[in-house]
Image (tube, rainbow, N blue to C red; front, side, top):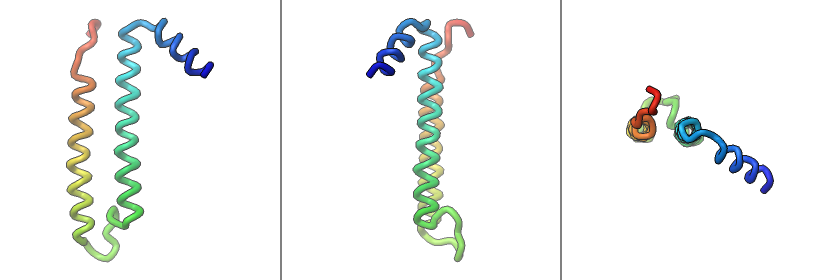
Length: 88
């Protein structure tokens, strides 16, 4: 709890622009890493990432899912970074 209180204190003392920028960075990195881990985990665990014995329906569905989810990730990051900062 003391770490959380200390972090809250420093975030409240930080300038609003810097705080919003760091929140954008954290959201972008965490959403990108979550997308990466989910897709790598599902693809490697189920054998859909690398077509060893030819292309199967699982490979096709996995790569379609990967493309759609990548598009959604790009869209979410665009929405996060769309607002301009006052200094530029």
